[in-house]
Length: 501
Image (spheres, rainbow, N blue to C red):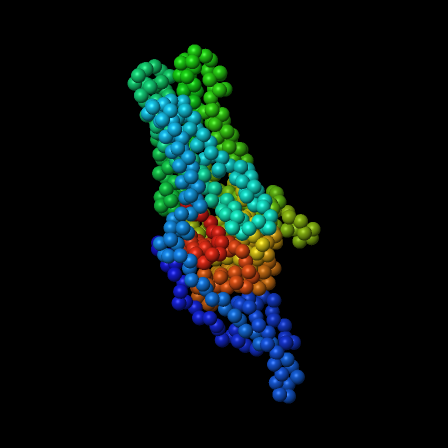
């Protein structure tokens, strides 16, 4: 799907209604969306005592994009932080490989190769462990606003941590292919049982890794997401089990060569400790699998809000939800629920819109029921908004759901732009009121009445009005890419979800 990144020659500078005079004693409704900078002008008409204020909207001029088309494509599209992280990790591994080849004169030791594979696998799994990821978020967002924007805007890209997961995972597969070749050579040279088991388990691991790596390709992942989840999970579990078997028999081979005990080899083997950490991360997530009661609040035939009461939830967290825990999981940003009497958080909710079979099924079930939740709550993209003094929050459709958590937190001054079809009819008075409460001048663009907005131009207008330091968008991949590209190529830091991480 191609995206046109040129926004030149689009909507005009003024609209007729922006020039209408307003009496000074009449109060503008607080819900009127701001569309520009107002310039007051006082007039005294002949025989008229009333003074009037002429409300003139100064539309910001959308600046030209910086650089050439080629440089913009390379810098802002292909050379993303995610890919840079992936590249750095792969380059480091390549340097280690070259060093091993040089030290061992073209025939590296299989134990060193195995340790490199295990270390990369551990790093890959760690960057899918909730507490570890939350720790990185806390470290990267703890800097004060007095730091230059040039530093803070880079720290805000911590949500690209998926590059560590995929980079280390891919490197682990390459290392393990090399290890398997060496293990096969060792068995050919010495055909004993330990060497045979070591070789067979190595080939099984390579097969599982190949399945995981192939199914994780962005194109296949988007097209066959349910299959991707199944392959990733069951092949991963098979690999982890096989890894333990392989580690034991590999240690037996080493124990025989060193003429020592199996326990001594394991204790002194980096592989053993790497696999212990990897296994602990997996157990930590699945040991928190729980069947929780959910209380649906049907908003319309397009959306529902699922309320959970088993615990409170602070802003800026997400949670995985499922009704089939072995085959599919769906991640949602949580919104704190407030007790109207005490004003305290007494639960949380998630907004679900019709985006497929699973979400449609949840919308069509209005009765109280139970759903599975797993792991610890996880920070996401919007948590990095704390790094900025002022921001613009952009959402389309049900993307407003994750934004409600940010709006509830009320930490960073913000303007809101929400484009959706029939917001009141689709999401109800309560959601719209929460948006208005966070930004009384929020721009809620009803696409049924006004058509689709020139979203880059409208968002830039809010940036201009509020002097925002950054833009955060929650939308579908096409609109997310358009807004992030349109802002960053004009020098405005912008952040949106990564859909292939």
